[in-house]
Length: 227
Image (cartoon, rainbow, N blue to C red; front, side):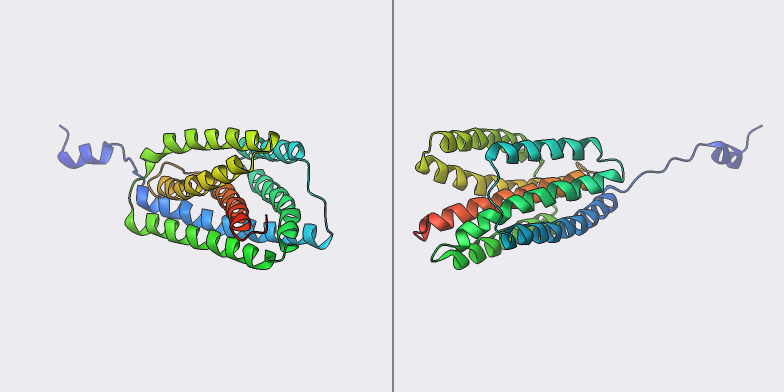
């Protein structure tokens, strides 16, 4: 005859993961890796600026970006994924160097660059901090953001190919709004367990900051009369 204690002893033990604690761990790892990649990008951008590197053709930039992003995605679950992340962010940092040199060479360039950098940092800290403190679920924004980014990307290509300054300015405004939404969405995904890979979370936030900075640079350059 089985006793109650025997039944309890023979019952399988199942462990459940605490989603908030897992999300917090991924968030910490993401912020740590993001800070390191931003520092590395600043170094590669500084090298490009110091050597007066010429801007890369947009086809080379896009090819390098999508190629390295593919590598990161394939290696996201291995230690080599970290090396791929630094390769991607270092490459994008290097492409940013000539752009910063271009703005710095303008009469009001230093102020434009510093304002864009400060604005990017302020937007990220405010929105990411809000998502962390409020713990709100912004997963509903995912589909809208993906469609919006695709539309803005195609519109940006059209503005570049057909040289339409007004459309280019509108695209920059769209990207600022979309990237702001991306910060809320990605941070929320990490907190609530929708994103458990800190390598991919880092890449997503880095690209968001990169596009946000470029958009602010363009808009501030035009508003200040330097573009």
